[in-house]
Amino acid sequence: MKKTNLDSWICEAEGIVELTRSALEALQLRRLNELLAKEKRRGGFYSDLPESIASLNGLKSLPFTTSEQLVRFGNGMLLVSQSEVSRIITDSTSGTTGEAKRVYYTEGDCGHTVGFFAAGLSELVFAGDTVLIAMPFSGSFGLGELIAAAIEKLGARPLKTGIGKTFGELRRTMAEHRPNVFVGMPVPLLSVLRYLGKGSLRRALISGDACPKSAVQETERILGSKLFPHYGSREMGLGGAVTCPAHEGMHIRENHVIAEIIGTSGQALPDGEFGELCITTIGMEAQPLIRYKTGDTARILKKDCPCGGVTRRLCGVERIYEDSLTSLDDALFALPCLVDYRASRQGERLFIDALTDGSPCVKSISAAAKKLYSDYEISATARECMDSDAPMYLGKRYLAKG
Image 1: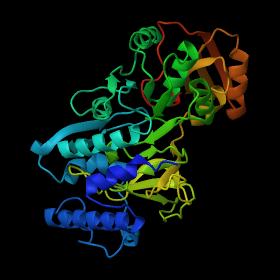
Image 2 (image 1 turned 30 degrees about the vertical axis):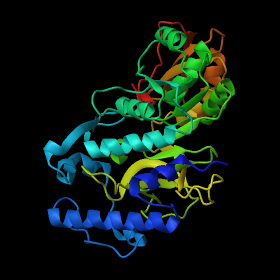
Image 3 (image 1 turned 180 degrees about the vertical axis):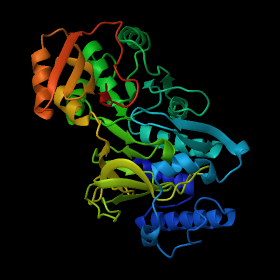
Image 4 (image 1 turned 60 degrees about the horizontal axis):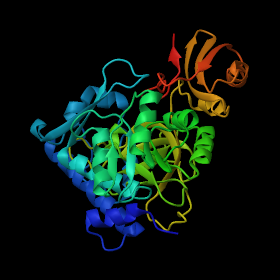
């Protein structure tokens, strides 16, 4: 089996002849100590931390950084001048309240992300391909723009579709440009496939949201190929872990990110156990974070990857908050009639507004939801999806409160 292309990219980016576990961990320790020394000299947010640690195991003795701290002290975490900042992303995603997080990037940070994206995409994107990018485009160094740059780097053609397009618009785009690769969020991809059919699409990288098992299974059945999940976040430079041809977990961008899994009391958990993902971003120039608690659950796989890659792998990533739709998505998208739906909750009543293939399936939707929300009154409505409709969530899926 072919080894993950991420290993080759790390070697090229870091000037390493052969990537081994010891070489990678030595790089991580050197970068972490360089970061600690810089923070000490600067006298900023992390200046109370030691100037260096003797081994990576010493990272466990350092305090965590929380999302609340990033909101309150984000400007104080900058290690560069404002003039060197090329991009600021404000986290105003659904489910957050109060002041939003601001995450800063230099041009170098964005360049590293393009290289990482290209390494991950090269597993499924080849020269001459046309790639439909159903991700947000927000100007210079935005997510969609960085993905497009990575695709061009591979000799393929990016189709900058963005988000929010109606199914009719997507139908015309697919008929005119005949993309064979899709990059976007998982449920909108399944909605497109169920409503429009796969057309010329053959392969897909999914990212930006949790992917329910039923959606994965149905999407792979329609496409006729395995999906390539990707994990990333604003705090880790938008790109964090990618899937290799073995399709057994996502290889972590370990030259730029040290990943830990921690338990509820903050203890480090061994590989194979589920807990909260905690990251130290040793490759970020503008705003590196030390032991940042992501709010996502995951585990790091224990066994070596069948591809022979050196980097560790994440598996089972899900968000930690009470309004996640992952379980409900998994139950409802097991119904072949469902194209998309939106859910909200008012008191002890759950509302579901569904788009379907025209089949009479309101009772099936209600029954599937009732198994999960047994104490709730389920109020479901459904209508046939039309070309004028669009995916019902533009970003991450969540259970709205009325």
